[in-house]
Image (cartoon, rainbow, N blue to C red; front, side, top):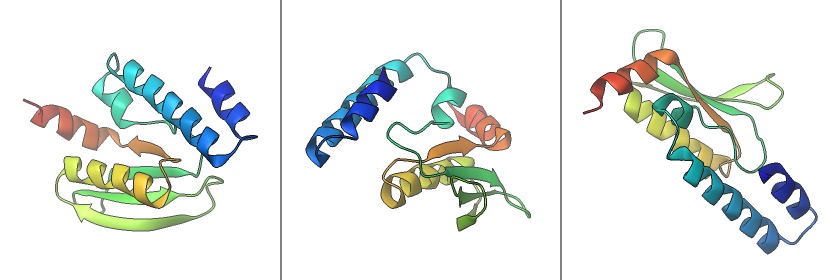
Length: 121
């Protein structure tokens, strides 16, 4: 259903598209209450697609954040390394929101997910 809302909105004014995106986001927020930590952290895009923001292990420890283009042919926004996985994940979601208007998938490596799960109270 979300895809239909967005596809119809593509033919509408920016205000109508924004309302459709808000509706899709609200629907995802409701669904997220039933998701596991891994499903929430590896977040598919709600409105459009502009590549993938990755949280990956850094070469000398910690984690880096990077953006992969939609076609996979280019990488950018190499940020980090971050000592804590939670900081890297926060930066990844912020990069997606600020730089890419929330239109990227956010993918978090298993090592970062494991560290965050281990630190959870």
